[in-house]
Image (cartoon, rainbow, N blue to C red; front, side):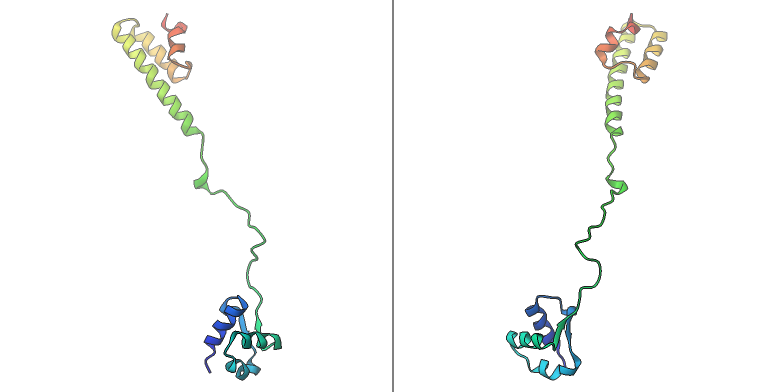
Length: 133
């Protein structure tokens, strides 16, 4: 006695999954005779077909969302990029000054050390500072 089609029909009528439909073993003959949706509903009212409770975790209880290591965005990269751009600009300017002969090699090294230590905010700050005078 194969009742898979009846189980599928009952699941559709009751709007539940097939696994939750339970047939009472004592009343299988009456269940087998059921053809229409109304027959299934009548069997549910009589108690021959029941619906099992939901197993597992309820959807209402929300899990805490943890931020994974891959989702953390650091500000360091932006600061580093700004540092690199400014440093390159300042070093290029100092290099041109040395080529022109406006500063000697000792002054060049001193200024480059200050650039590395982030003593200057901008190229304008470097030009106006005491380092070039």
